[in-house]
Amino acid sequence: MTRYVVLLRGINVGGHAKIAMADLRALLTNLGYEDVKTHLQSGNAVLTAKDKPDHLVRTLESSLLSELGMSVKCLVRTAPEMRKIVDGDPFAGVATEGSKYVVLFLSAPLDKALVAALDPADYAPEQFRIAGREAYLWHPDGIHDAKMNKIKWETRFKVVASARNWNTVTKLADMVAAT
Image (cartoon, rainbow, N blue to C red):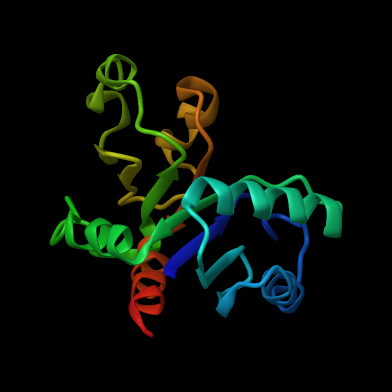
């Protein structure tokens, strides 16, 4: 059995794809997952499953569609992956406000040539670092009008992407580590 963080993309954001967390917990529990917990209202869950990550994603996306009529992309990370994300924080000591610091979770590593084409100077004072299937984004002037939001990560890099602020990332890492 493996502990996972499940990230539903675009849930309860701006009135889009509304799902009550109690309904999400019930759906996950009815699918046979154990120790199901949710965090906030934005599609964050922690659970225990026998499934491999790819199978878990397919099952979740299929069930959200068949049971709730919602076409929602999902991403998953294991407890060790979440710990590595937190421990590998490239902006420790720089990104001092968790609400302005975002981890963009990705379905696959980004094409290195496409990443190389991003000129960091175009986004200053914002900063980014890519590490595996995560992009760390520091928005010192706030997220709402951030220049990096205009990158359109999913379209440009052909991946599923879902962002969580640092406060949520560290909370989810703690939740998935707890037994």
